[in-house]
Image (cartoon, rainbow, N blue to C red; front, side, top):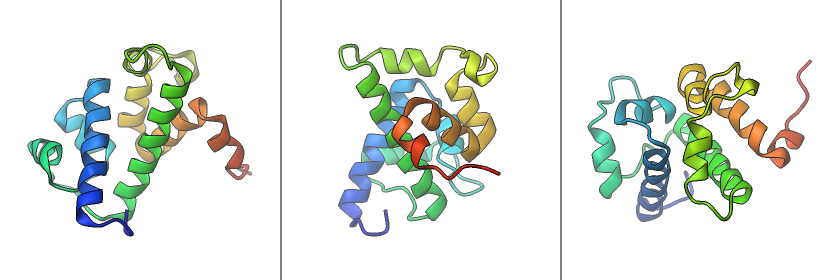
Length: 132
């Protein structure tokens, strides 16, 4: 996000918040999943929906990149049904110990976000270095 100007960052912010809204996350859950700075009030999400850009922060940028990758993978998995992505994100999955993907991402932080992305996006998973 560092290379984007304010308007581009604000546009990206609106897109990400729209995705999170569509998946059914509350404002507090959005603050958590985006790793916004400590003390960020959930009410700030309303400002992000308008024209305020997310902080130009490496942690936030990494989360945005993964969330966009997840949304893209869901779009390609369910190209004919725009509601399936939200349904998938809110349905318990054996892969995640019978938790929903959203629960994994909210409760497990960045590792949970990466786990959900790796499950959905084989090209992302293939490019990750093997853990020893």
